[in-house]
Image 1 (tube, rainbow, N blue to C red):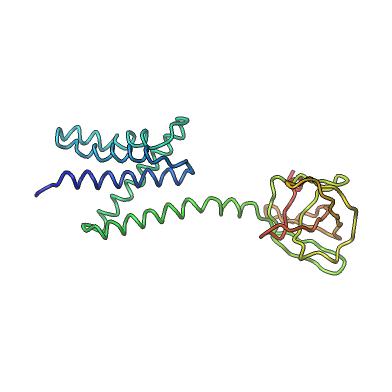
Image 2 (cartoon, one colour):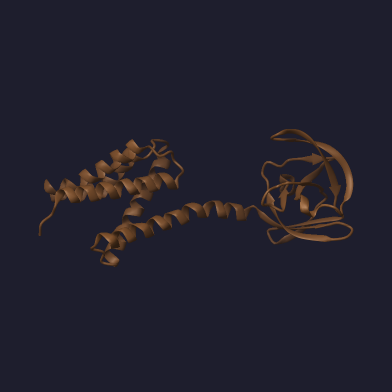
Length: 237
């Protein structure tokens, strides 16, 4: 069997560079091309170790990922480096498993396998914000004299607003019109201090860990983007 060393080197260079890039992307690290190049170069050179000694090659196969990681990842705390290097090893093991399980021998099948791995990591990377957002959502009920609104409220961890020791919630403007006026207060926002009218609902309930709790709150109607309600931190203290 003829082995073309230049092709072996280039393939390993490309694959290691890609995997280092993916790990940096996964952990939201700033991408530095020279570090990715050095890591890919190290990965490409390591595979040539079998030319000198098979035992040395086995050693490099086991510890080579650590060398690549030290060159390709930002040097920080020891724990962070261990996690990143572990992720690099996991990607490598998954890719090897793909190749072995599906007997991939052609470049286009290899490209498809790598695309599948990239897709898995992209999904994993974007799953965390979705989980966080869902963990901050709560079912609420806000009632006026004429109607009752059953909404999904989002915990705004920066909302500590109070008036007369009552926590203030922000509801989307489209729900205003039928609530009892309470008073106008000054609220500090990013754009400065603004006067806003507060309203007192007839009843407010929130479901926390499967238990429905009644709370005394005030409501302010505002433009709050995609959310129907921004909850106050004080409701959970």
